[in-house]
Amino acid sequence: MRWLKSIVFTAFLIFILLIVASNLWIVSSTSHNVFSDITKLPDHRVALVLGTSNKTVSGNVNLYFRKRMETAAQLYKMGKIDHLILSGDNRSKYYNEPIEMQKALIKLGVPTTAITLDYAGLRTLDSIVRCKEIFGQNRITIITQPFHSYRALFISRYYNIEAVAMVTDEPDSEHSFRIRLREYFARTKAVLDLYVLKTAPRFLGEKENIQVSTGR
Image (cartoon, rainbow, N blue to C red; front, side, top):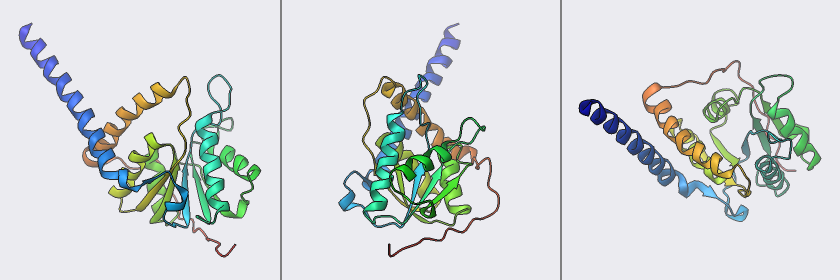
């Protein structure tokens, strides 16, 4: 029994150290490419907007979704970007993140000609790899909240994508602690996916060329 307890304790300690090391590595290696001031943001002509549900489980507006859409529209109107890839989950006809993002951005004044929908962005890894392999983008601005941006940039760097993140406000919500806690584990999984498991996107498919319209 003492031998078993020692094994369990050692395994638990290794697990905790892996989480801590993964989070420190990801945040410290990417924080210099995270921007909150639009005026200091490098001019990358294409933005990748990472998807999330437009509604919470209780049916209220998801503030994380709204903040991402408002930031994306602001960047477009200021001329910091010319085209947006909206990447998210399209698990059924009743749940379609890219379509909901497009609807929100059109209401905010972004034309459909400046939007490309990626229906196979089932995970952050999928969204980023598809941005390069399917849509041919090697230089992007990622739009999401700060807690999520470090992992997105870490994955981008692994795939030799020159990326910066324009982060939105992190709204205070009843789910914020749970979301942050989940991200700690997601960062650890990202390290394992990239360097151990060599995880690939679930779907790739045919390439789609994006025609970036400048000079608006």
